[in-house]
Amino acid sequence: MNSNKEIERVAIIGAGIAGLSCARELKLQGISADIFEKSRGPSGRMSTRRSEGWSADHGAQYFTARDPRFIQEVQQWMRAGTAAIWTPKIKVYEAKAWRESNSQEIRYIGTPNMNSPGKHLAEELSIQYETTISQLDRRSDKWHLRSNEIGDIPTSYDFVVLAIPAPQASALVRSLDIRASDIADSAQMKACWTMMANFPNQKTADFDAAFINQEIIGWICQNGSKPMRQGNTWTIHGSPAWSQENVELSKEDAQDQMVQCLTRLGLNCRDAEISMHRWRYASGGLENSISFLSLPDIGLGLCSDWLNGGRVEGAWLSGLELALMLKEI
Image (cartoon, rainbow, N blue to C red; front, side, top):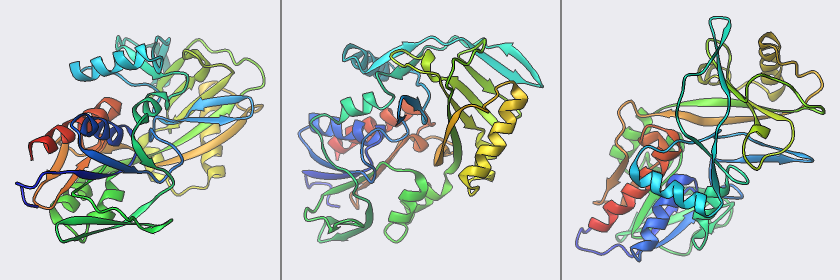
């Protein structure tokens, strides 16, 4: 890419927090950005599953804020009513025993749902949902995109940003640039099996959430303990190691193993209405964070939580910092 040529139009693949953050900053700079998202809505793993009479945050359970820029952003979300502080009673289970958690971190959640901050970020952005970008082609110093659903995207772009999980990014760039594909291939991603259990009657426990160590389950949370949540639905995450080792299990088999583990932990799910979800790329990333990847010579960039230490904050900062870098190209 000619570094003297101004970037006027950017395509962003993925409407998770990284892609949305990048698009918002580009908009502030006066750069046009179109987002393409394969699912029906924004926010990625900041998501809430809804069913008849109940809902559950089945992806990210909460987020923290440490960088001053993200703290300021979260405060803005709170003023907009799309985030709140969550103060759960947390316990830890390890070595076959329960103990109180000593964590003093401030935890935030989206309100009224976990995807609310993402919806807030998506306002006034150009987003094409249910559009899976399957091919990138660079011709005459422009990017041309193709999707599974509608074929060729009619607009061409000066710069393409991939704000998607590492394996998906690798598949798109493998034949285009070895630098980008090597970075994506080096990321170690882990799956997460998620179980949502809705109980017909109030399920009593002496904690709102629990970290579980040395078991196939890694996290248990009473969804109703969060601000603006109702009902008696629990979210249970399989541990990263077990989830990755058993990523190809059927939902029924994964559920059976998780229910057995919960029973041993004292949570009987016999009367619960249970729903399962498999996140193929839930956690993990680069061993050494680089925040983002920018390749101005070909007009390609990568941003995501997996490039920046994981977590919601890492995703938001990754998108922001890539957008700021584009301003300097």
